Length: 166
Image (cartoon, rainbow, N blue to C red; front, top):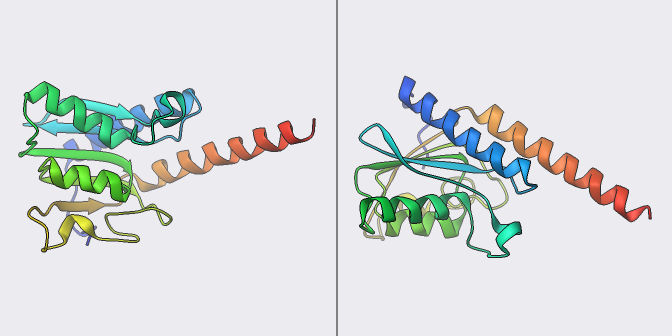
């Protein structure tokens, strides 16, 4: 289960702000505004934002794209020693990729009550039946992340309503 009681460091805030900047890139191109940053040794080694609508690939989530970039950067599928910062709670698919890539820690902003695979619906990252467990912290800059999502979907509904009038 996510542990919101653990204190966040100044670096945690810095890197989550970076993830929010990635989410803004998605928002700017009408993608669901989720951003991710992977950090190792206090340095950003990978970033990602949702591209599913543009690529028409169901797996082009921010976390997956950042994991792929981090693996390329480190020339390894193992991302031990890495922390993933992501604006919204990862889904089940992304949680599986997090486990398989051996990421040590996940810090996410807002929960995903409809698809959360880390805490809201499922707790895959700490299932002791699996061969890897992940430290999870939630709630960092959650208002900012949640507000981005609300704003995006409000605008999307408005666009859809406008199109349906014609």
